[in-house]
Image 1 (tube, rainbow, N blue to C red):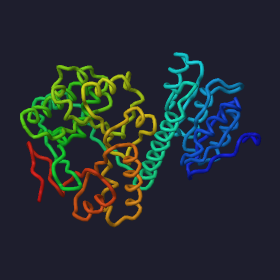
Image 2: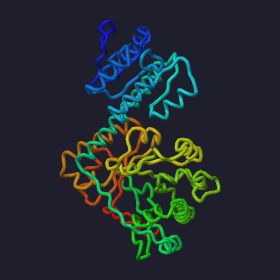
Image 3: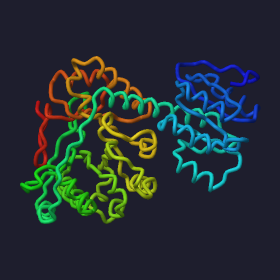
Image 4: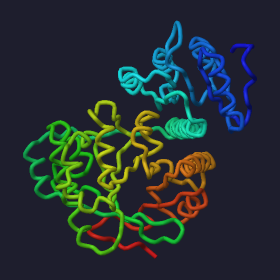
Length: 390
């Protein structure tokens, strides 16, 4: 830290690091956050910032790009080795396409031009800190609960073709926590082929055969059919494999779901990484232009961190059922769920608790602030459309 800089403004427990070699700009940044909920710490060099992040407690970094000895892009690359989730907002007075592209590739949270608008900058940093806190809450859930990853080793082309011909869709209701009314239904793959009896077996076979595109298109087509024919304004939740984002059919106006896009919520599991998906950002933007919404599935049990969450900017998140099981008797789970629901509400994101099996779980989750609920307590998945148990 540089002793000649103005004192930090302490407005909360979170620490935001401001990094700039220009004292005037650094003072302006500190003043911008003088009334914020965060503690702002100022660094005149990128090296100081690296040392400070290594000590822990930093929840976001706001850095100039053009600095001597170590640039903001070089700082970003080094910070990724300390904390892969830490959001870094880059400031520049000389916008260049090359540096903007590199910033995105390295996982920068935002790329902001100088002179900056103070209100917009505060909003950007606030959003970054909230996403970071949500990511850390998720990682604590991972550490507490662990995860499973079993799957069957089936790669029979004949069996897979049988699945494509005969697969059907089960629908499970998602209800509003407030009054128990139906908000929507999740479409779930079902197979009656003995060699590939469950969704996990079918997905693994599709991955091994390179048939994920065909499988995804088949599921989306079958899922849309009964929904198009019902007058009820239910939302339809449809699961996507990350590789589905490479399928042009997903954003085609001629696709099965395009005609009801305003009712469709695409679920993308955080158990898989989006890092290997080409043009993921462009595809997600095209999906939203058509009217689709995005949900992050399995929150609390996956591998995805800040980059994937920031890329998706979901309207809905679904808490993994491992967090939900026996939540009424687990203070630790209650604390985790409350933390996630509070952070999501601050970001305007709706929370679905899936895997609800008892009245006690339902009541606890409602008290903890979950907006929507799903699970066997309300109805098992079935042919269109299961009613909710009273």
